[in-house]
Image (cartoon, rainbow, N blue to C red; front, side, top):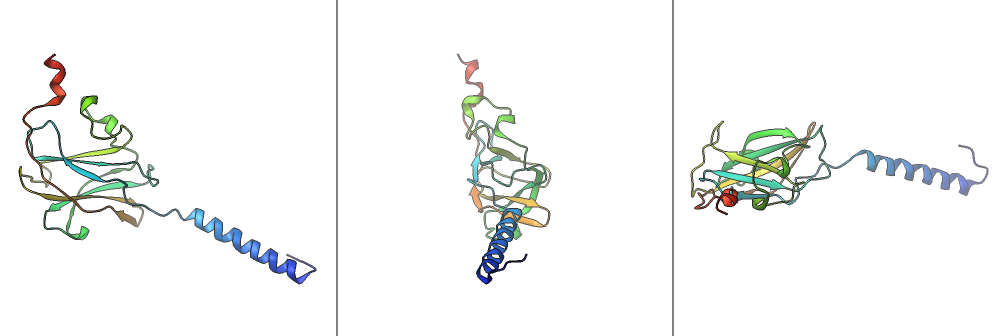
Amino acid sequence: MYCSHPRSAAAGFCFLVFLVSVETVFAQSALTAPPDLQVIDTPNDGGESLTVLWAPGPSDSPDGRYEVLFGGASATDPAALKVIAEFPANTRYVKDAKSAWWTRNAERTWHQYVIRNGKGVEMKNGTAYTVTVAMRKGAERAIGPLIQATPSPDWFNWNQFNNLI
Protein backbone atom coordinates (compact mmCIF):
# COMPACT_ATOMS: atom_id res chain seq x y z
CA MET A 1 0.00 0.00 0.00
CA TYR A 2 1.44 3.36 -1.00
CA CYS A 3 0.40 6.56 0.75
CA SER A 4 1.89 9.97 0.10
CA HIS A 5 1.14 11.33 3.53
CA PRO A 6 2.76 9.62 6.57
CA ARG A 7 -0.40 9.91 8.66
CA SER A 8 -2.55 8.25 6.01
CA ALA A 9 -0.10 5.33 5.84
CA ALA A 10 -0.35 4.83 9.62
CA ALA A 11 -4.14 5.06 9.47
CA GLY A 12 -4.24 2.50 6.66
CA PHE A 13 -1.98 0.15 8.58
CA CYS A 14 -4.14 0.48 11.72
CA PHE A 15 -7.27 -0.17 9.65
CA LEU A 16 -5.66 -3.25 8.10
CA VAL A 17 -4.64 -4.58 11.54
CA PHE A 18 -8.18 -3.94 12.82
CA LEU A 19 -9.71 -5.91 9.93
CA VAL A 20 -7.36 -8.85 10.49
CA SER A 21 -8.14 -8.83 14.24
CA VAL A 22 -11.91 -8.78 13.69
CA GLU A 23 -11.64 -11.56 11.11
CA THR A 24 -9.58 -13.69 13.51
CA VAL A 25 -12.10 -13.22 16.33
CA PHE A 26 -15.02 -14.32 14.16
CA ALA A 27 -13.08 -17.25 12.68
CA GLN A 28 -12.30 -18.65 16.15
CA SER A 29 -15.68 -19.54 17.61
CA ALA A 30 -15.25 -20.30 21.28
CA LEU A 31 -16.60 -23.66 22.35
CA THR A 32 -19.13 -23.29 25.17
CA ALA A 33 -20.32 -25.72 27.80
CA PRO A 34 -23.93 -26.88 27.55
CA PRO A 35 -26.13 -24.04 28.88
CA ASP A 36 -28.77 -24.39 31.64
CA LEU A 37 -27.79 -27.96 32.51
CA GLN A 38 -30.28 -29.81 34.73
CA VAL A 39 -30.25 -33.36 36.10
CA ILE A 40 -33.50 -34.64 37.60
CA ASP A 41 -35.04 -37.88 38.74
CA THR A 42 -36.81 -39.30 35.69
CA PRO A 43 -40.52 -38.63 36.18
CA ASN A 44 -43.20 -41.32 35.86
CA ASP A 45 -40.89 -44.31 36.22
CA GLY A 46 -40.08 -47.11 38.62
CA GLY A 47 -36.81 -45.46 39.62
CA GLU A 48 -33.17 -46.20 38.87
CA SER A 49 -32.89 -43.56 36.12
CA LEU A 50 -31.99 -39.88 35.79
CA THR A 51 -32.93 -37.39 33.07
CA VAL A 52 -30.37 -34.86 31.84
CA LEU A 53 -31.71 -31.68 30.18
CA TRP A 54 -29.91 -28.69 28.66
CA ALA A 55 -30.73 -25.78 26.40
CA PRO A 56 -29.49 -25.64 22.82
CA GLY A 57 -26.15 -23.87 22.64
CA PRO A 58 -24.27 -21.79 20.10
CA SER A 59 -21.93 -24.73 19.45
CA ASP A 60 -24.73 -27.13 18.37
CA SER A 61 -23.91 -28.49 14.93
CA PRO A 62 -23.50 -31.90 13.26
CA ASP A 63 -19.70 -31.75 13.66
CA GLY A 64 -19.96 -31.13 17.43
CA ARG A 65 -20.60 -33.97 19.86
CA TYR A 66 -22.11 -34.11 23.32
CA GLU A 67 -20.71 -36.44 25.98
CA VAL A 68 -22.69 -37.44 29.06
CA LEU A 69 -20.38 -38.04 32.04
CA PHE A 70 -21.47 -40.06 35.09
CA GLY A 71 -19.98 -40.98 38.47
CA GLY A 72 -20.52 -41.40 42.18
CA ALA A 73 -21.66 -38.61 44.47
CA SER A 74 -18.14 -38.07 45.82
CA ALA A 75 -16.78 -37.02 42.39
CA THR A 76 -15.65 -33.39 42.36
CA ASP A 77 -13.41 -33.53 39.28
CA PRO A 78 -14.76 -34.18 35.75
CA ALA A 79 -11.73 -36.41 35.12
CA ALA A 80 -13.12 -38.86 37.69
CA LEU A 81 -16.37 -39.26 35.71
CA LYS A 82 -16.96 -41.90 33.06
CA VAL A 83 -18.27 -41.04 29.57
CA ILE A 84 -21.44 -43.14 29.26
CA ALA A 85 -22.86 -41.66 26.06
CA GLU A 86 -21.68 -39.66 23.05
CA PHE A 87 -23.85 -38.35 20.22
CA PRO A 88 -24.00 -35.55 17.60
CA ALA A 89 -24.86 -32.13 19.03
CA ASN A 90 -27.85 -31.69 16.76
CA THR A 91 -29.75 -34.72 18.14
CA ARG A 92 -31.53 -35.97 21.30
CA TYR A 93 -34.21 -33.31 21.70
CA VAL A 94 -37.11 -33.27 24.17
CA LYS A 95 -39.51 -33.29 21.20
CA ASP A 96 -38.07 -36.70 20.15
CA ALA A 97 -38.74 -38.33 23.54
CA LYS A 98 -41.61 -40.76 23.80
CA SER A 99 -43.63 -39.18 26.57
CA ALA A 100 -46.88 -37.32 26.92
CA TRP A 101 -46.68 -33.60 26.19
CA TRP A 102 -48.17 -32.71 29.58
CA THR A 103 -45.28 -34.38 31.41
CA ARG A 104 -42.38 -32.66 29.63
CA ASN A 105 -39.89 -30.93 31.95
CA ALA A 106 -38.32 -28.62 29.35
CA GLU A 107 -39.05 -26.94 26.04
CA ARG A 108 -39.20 -29.10 22.92
CA THR A 109 -35.99 -27.54 21.55
CA TRP A 110 -33.89 -28.56 24.57
CA HIS A 111 -31.65 -31.63 24.57
CA GLN A 112 -32.54 -34.66 26.69
CA TYR A 113 -30.74 -37.83 27.65
CA VAL A 114 -32.07 -40.47 30.04
CA ILE A 115 -29.48 -42.42 32.04
CA ARG A 116 -30.67 -45.96 32.78
CA ASN A 117 -29.06 -49.06 34.26
CA GLY A 118 -26.97 -51.11 31.86
CA LYS A 119 -23.93 -50.62 29.63
CA GLY A 120 -21.59 -49.84 32.51
CA VAL A 121 -24.11 -47.87 34.59
CA GLU A 122 -25.46 -49.28 37.82
CA MET A 123 -27.84 -46.98 39.72
CA LYS A 124 -29.82 -47.61 42.88
CA ASN A 125 -32.80 -45.67 44.19
CA GLY A 126 -31.94 -43.27 46.99
CA THR A 127 -28.24 -43.04 46.05
CA ALA A 128 -26.84 -39.73 44.77
CA TYR A 129 -24.82 -39.57 41.54
CA THR A 130 -22.78 -36.86 39.82
CA VAL A 131 -23.58 -36.03 36.20
CA THR A 132 -22.44 -33.45 33.66
CA VAL A 133 -22.42 -32.91 29.91
CA ALA A 134 -19.43 -31.89 27.80
CA MET A 135 -19.37 -30.39 24.30
CA ARG A 136 -16.58 -31.63 22.04
CA LYS A 137 -15.43 -30.36 18.65
CA GLY A 138 -12.20 -31.88 17.44
CA ALA A 139 -9.63 -31.55 20.22
CA GLU A 140 -11.59 -28.84 22.08
CA ARG A 141 -13.81 -29.79 25.01
CA ALA A 142 -16.07 -27.62 27.19
CA ILE A 143 -17.46 -29.28 30.33
CA GLY A 144 -20.63 -28.17 32.11
CA PRO A 145 -21.07 -27.93 35.88
CA LEU A 146 -21.10 -31.09 37.98
CA ILE A 147 -24.63 -31.75 39.23
CA GLN A 148 -25.77 -34.28 41.81
CA ALA A 149 -29.12 -36.03 41.52
CA THR A 150 -30.81 -39.01 43.15
CA PRO A 151 -33.12 -41.46 41.36
CA SER A 152 -36.31 -42.57 43.06
CA PRO A 153 -39.47 -44.45 42.04
CA ASP A 154 -42.71 -42.57 41.43
CA TRP A 155 -46.06 -43.62 42.87
CA PHE A 156 -48.06 -42.55 39.84
CA ASN A 157 -47.34 -42.46 36.09
CA TRP A 158 -48.77 -39.19 34.77
CA ASN A 159 -48.11 -40.36 31.19
CA GLN A 160 -51.12 -42.68 31.61
CA PHE A 161 -53.39 -39.98 33.04
CA ASN A 162 -55.56 -39.92 29.91
CA ASN A 163 -56.47 -43.59 30.55
CA LEU A 164 -58.23 -42.57 33.78
CA ILE A 165 -60.53 -40.07 32.13
